[in-house]
Image (cartoon, rainbow over all chains, first blue to last red; front, side, top):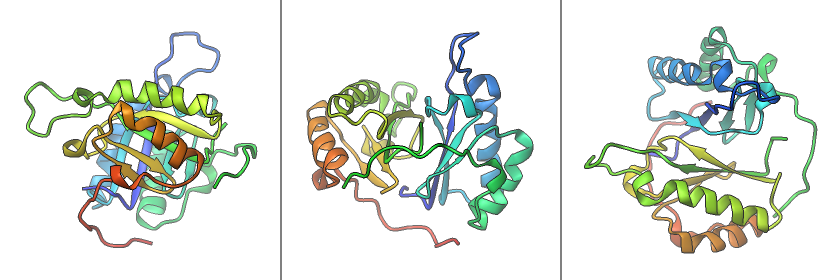
Amino acid sequence: MPPFLRHVFVCENQRPPGHPKGCCADKGGAALKVALKKAAAEAGLKGEVRINSAGCLDACEFGAAMVVYPEQVWYGGVQPSDLAEIVQSHLVDGTPVERLRIAFPPKGKPRP
Amino acid sequence: MPPFLRHVFVCENQRPPGHPKGCCADKGGAALKVALKKAAAEAGLKGEVRINSAGCLDACEFGAAMVVYPEQVWYGGVQPSDLAEIVQSHLVDGTPVERLRIAFPPKGKPRP
């Protein structure tokens, strides 16, 4: 079945209660993944776009977080009410939802 | 911290015993993820390359499976003894390990 045209990883990581970073599970990650998968299937994307659960994406403070590959677009603070726009604008029409993108500071050095 | 220069998702999905597709958990997925994370850190890739656990990647019959983004390289039948080569050749030097790549049949239609 793979490779997928787009592959979305939704963080479902659960940290212990009171952890200073928080976690995506406490911000609805698991329910978001289920709802996004359903919405993508309803939009006819089954087999083309895979909605995947993932462990900690290291974006805890921006949760609930997800990343769309291969374009490497990160979304944070995603609410159930955002999913229809993510599906139609990004996954169907190819236009990322700018208002939900995480603004990470630049880092890292290039590798081959 | 993200975006990462490379982001590796290792399938840890567990299916019930006897499932016809098999599953990556039964093929050592969880241990592979732990060992790959350790090997990548030892190679100095911490912060640049993220080794992530993932739910079912829909490549069950090719497990233990993993995918490297953004280059969308899929590996299957990965053994612990393959990890050093994946780290050095692919994650450090940028050259995928051809012998481990999954040969998926072409599919899907292009989207914008």
